[in-house]
Each structure stands twice: as structure tokens, then as C-alpha cells.
Image 1: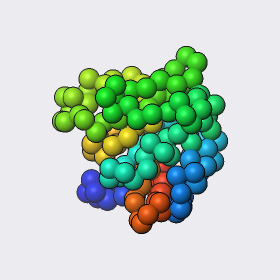
Image 2: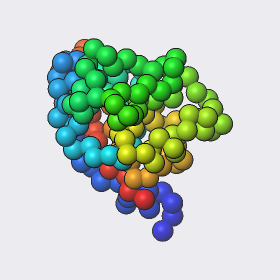
Image 3: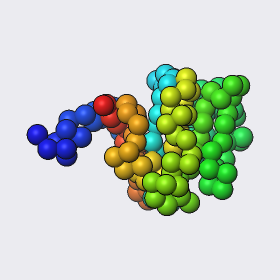
Length: 155
């Protein structure tokens, strides 16, 4: 069996949903949060404007770590911490280039803690993403419509 086959076999589709507004995307994030048990690594993938941060607002609020209004994209700070004692970490890899830049974030350390780690632009990790993890692929369909596809990726 080649590496590609083993990667495909280690992925399990958990859910797929189409949302029709930012509010509905946030609501879906809140619904998802009840299924995330730390330690948990969630990789969010999708083009600019696909709704990754909007979904994260709902997840963080659903975990009780912060209100939706407190959640912002960590594009410039790279990592935001929410909740008491580092309950949720929210990272953004958009401005990072290459494995060396990404290694400076310490994602391995964060994902080893009893926390939920949400990583926007998770596709930049490639095959170096810690396992197990959850991958959320977001796709902008039209206007405010977004397709959200959730997969569990095992070791």
C-alpha cells in the first residue's frame, strides 16, 4: 500500500453542512464545540474569505472560552489564547512560509496540552500535521453560502 492510500484510509468523513449566513456558520461552530474533547487539534482549510474565523468564533464560544465578539483572526499575532489556563489556542498560518517558520509556533507543544488547538490555514502543515486531528475544509459557494466538510484524520 502506498502513502497516498494509507492517508485516504485514515480519514473519516464526520459531517458536511452548507450554511447560508455568517450567523448560521457561527451557530454551526457552537454545535461542533460540544464534540471537541481536549486534547484536540482542529485544522481549518480554505481560501481567503471562506469563513474560517467565523466558524472559530462559534467553536470558541461553544467551548465557553470567550464570547464571539472577543474572537479575532490571529493573522499578525499568530496565536491567540482563550479561556482560563490556555483552554483554547487559535493559530493562523497565513503569513508563515515554510516548515521553519511554522516550527517556531510550537504547535507540537500546544497540541500536546489538554487544550483545543484551532489552526487556520492548516493546509500549510501538509503531512507534518500532528495526528490525530480534525480537518475542516471550508468552501465559499456564493454570497454568504459556505460548504463545511469535517473529517477525522487518524494516525
